[in-house]
Length: 242
Ligand code: ATP
Image (tube, rainbow, N blue to C red):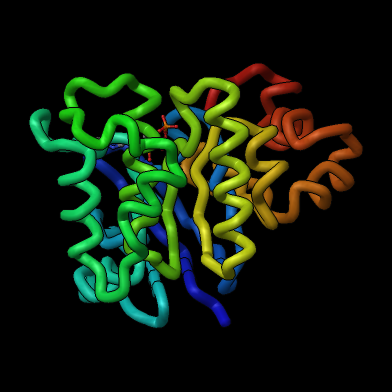
């Protein structure tokens, strides 16, 4: 079953073309990576997917529905961790977990999620008093507490220390094993190589390559996704930023 369908998506901000004709599909249970340099159009694309932005043109379906029209219904089935999202300074960790769990029909036990993400000991702390890594882990826990069928993660492990990063990968592995569909926006090629079934490489608002990490490595005759990425984005040849 196809969970996400994107066909010829276009989105500009004034004269800036953020996304210029992007098409891809994501199957149920797949972990799909959205890769690309800063400004390549990744966040704009995922924001259109979850109904936060209105495309200029193109067709998007998530669980067969148009996110522009059915945002609320889709939000109940989707967990989202966005780069920019912030919580009120004074909200405590446990309060945020309880609140987010209440948005969903069949949430996980939020106390168990809190423990899984090692947030139990700081459950009484206010959001503003958390470290960057603790905030990041809380945002992930909040994205997952509703036991969503689809999870959209923008910059999964940014700001995490190496141990927390590895632990996060393990937890995402568990999520995959449970059949959850994951869209992962990332700058980290090791992360994409480890976690993603397929990746789309964005450059200047377009997808320049789409395939499994292993397939892209083979296609480019390189030794890793990192090298394949540099080849595919043209960084190797001309050093041009997207
Ligand atoms: P990053 O890796 O830096 O998060 P990205 O691939 O997610 O980048 P987008 O955030 O989608 O890229 O941005 C694509 C282009 O659209 C960039 O040129 C950016 O400056 C521009 N852009 C994004 N959001 C806005 C906005 N709200 N108003 C104007 N321009 C925007």
